[in-house]
Image: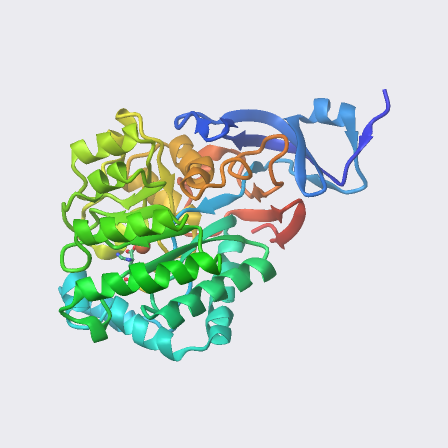
Amino acid sequence: MAKEKVDLLIKNAHELATPSSVGDRYDPKGLVIISDGAISVDEGRIVAVGKTSAIEQHFKSETVIDASGRLVTPGFVDAHTHVIFAGTREEEFESRLQGLSYMDILAKGGGILKTVRETRKASKEQLIETARKTLDIMLKYGTTTVEVKSGYGLTTEDEVKCLEAAQELDREHPIDIVTTFLGAHAVPPEYEGETDGYVSLITEEMIPKIAKGRLAEFCDVFCENGVFNIEQSRRILKTGKEFSLKPKIHADELSSLGGAELAASIRATSADHLLFASNRGLKAMIKENVVPVLLPLASFSLMTGKYADARGIIRMGGRTALGTDFNPSCWSESMQMAIAFACRKLRLTQTEAIVAATIGAACAVGRSRDVGSLEKGKRADIVIFNIPNHMFLGYKFGVNLVYKVLKNGEVVVDCQEE
Ligand code: NIG
Ligand code: FE
């Protein structure tokens, strides 16, 4: 039988590990493990996955990558980030080490509001230049799709600037970017004491403009005591939905406000953080198919010792997703680090954490039909690691384990052996 010629073969992988999915359904506890695995790729898409002997029987290619001794997985999907901003906040980290809380700092005009002042001053080009470096690091650590929120502009013009920056990066950078409008990230100083007035600006001006310009797929809210309450959050997410922006929500991160319940009642795509979510709220979310996005690095950075109840969520039948929550107060680009913390602090197994970092996160950003697993027809977004099997992910941490990253079948990161 004549062999089919394809653009690329990856073969001899010590272990190939991937979730298997049908649409947005998959087993949150299961990876398909193929020893001596191989993948054939053509025109940027996966053609077949299987044992090296079987793949070699059917396919040939002039380009072959030998993955002997190594682990092959889908590219990571980072389900929650705030990549577009100017400036840094190392002095805030020092204040937090001295005992000030995240919300005290925000109430004093620091935190998010400091980043807002700096982001407003920056041009779109400056924001792109800074974010490009962040994306370069994410890609080197194995992330091939990332959700990016606005939220440091907080005027119509500055929010548009941030989302346009994200979209330009999507076009120029190998990483695929999914954009989320987060005008409701904080109440800007010009609306201090007039949160409802700012909510009206969001619903009457920002959302219509962002939807018309197709600048975002999702609409998000920081639903929190002292920021946006449940009713204000509902108003924003409902208006977003009317304009075809799918709802996401920063829910119950610092207090138990009922964000998880709101996510369920509005049928959000995801509810993120969930440190203080009630069992009732989590159950309602899971029933409505809302994806819980877990961000253990954000908990680690907050230093309150509080983490989401991931085991409870899994027991209730929830499909978890992981993200870095990369932002100026949680500065890590690495999904490998998120996995290491998910294992230690959320008590996910390596398998659960890898599923959450791939197909789970793809579901949370509405991309599960295209990425998140190594399956026929999906994008050839593939990571080859300098480790022999999936149990090393999470186990060996704090260094980059990546050997090569492929995006749409092209090698975009090529690291030498450590
Ligand atoms: O996901 N909590 C709100 N938003 C971000 C933090 C943003 C910031 O501190 O700049 C979060 O944790
Ligand atoms: Fe966030």
